[in-house]
Amino acid sequence: MEITSLASSGLSSQAVSIVLQVFESMEEAVVIADSKRCIVMMNTAAEKLFGCRQADVVGLPTKVFYADEKDFEARGQNTFNPSVNQISDPYIVRYQSMDGHIFYGETIGGPIRDESLSEVYFFAIIRDVSKRVRSEQTMSRLHSITSSRMLEYERRIYELLKLGCEHFGMLMGIVSCIEGQNYVVEAVYHPEDAVPEGAAFELENTYCVHTLDADGPTGFYHVAHSRIQYHPCYLNFGLEAYIGCPIEVDGERYGTINFSSPDPVEAFDGSDLNLVRLFAEWVGHEIARNRDLEVG
Image (cartoon, rainbow, N blue to C red; front, side):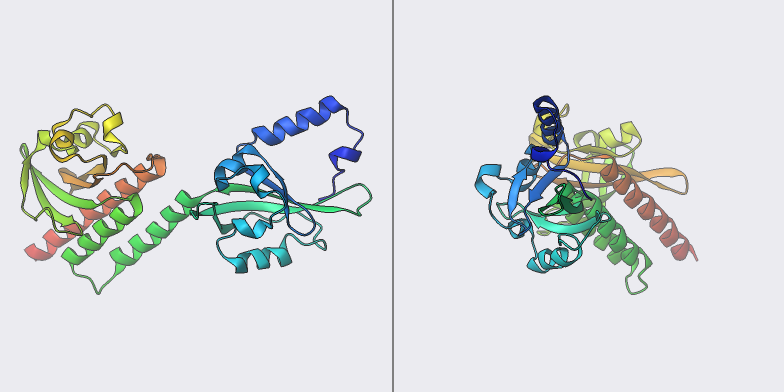
């Protein structure tokens, strides 16, 4: 991409001010580097994404933002190179914030040249897509579990609950069977085996009562700051986070699949609710299939 630098563009001071305001107001992180790939400037979104102030990183190589030095080197050959004359297609790379937090960033970038083509800068526009990448990875692992011929029914359910706990950042995963007003633990994943299979609770004392009332996926990422902060489950067990979905078997309500934790988690979005719905659908199909095998 060839554009004239602001300093030599002939733009009025008002126009330059507008351009800078647009730069600052962008939701995506934007980083500008010089020909040696040292940081020249970044917008507020980039400061937030990488956990630093512009003043603290100006002059540092952009390598400080890469989780893997090999990615930094590869991008120096393919994207941020004076011989490149076009903007890159979107690509995903692992970045790290200044406190060491690693995330996946979808990026487009390329060179910026002044009017004389004598001076080169580089820009990168970065969007955090960690959640999307994690969902895709979880879907792939879910397919591996559900299609495995090496796992028996009980083990597939266990591995699915473990996978859900890892994805949602939860401590415990449960498949429940609802019998009247009783909530019965049919399958469970907990690293300390704190809740045994067969344990029964009053339905009204579980968060799943809200899931059944909603007749669909329900999530609370920080119960203490939610509308259910006085629920018996929170008062008795202190579970801060929950996500669950009803399970249907052969068209009839069977129970729920749910994941919970004593610690708050990142706020749930639509992709999380869709994923837990998919987990519930698979468990429902698997229960029905296992019933047919037992009858046969």
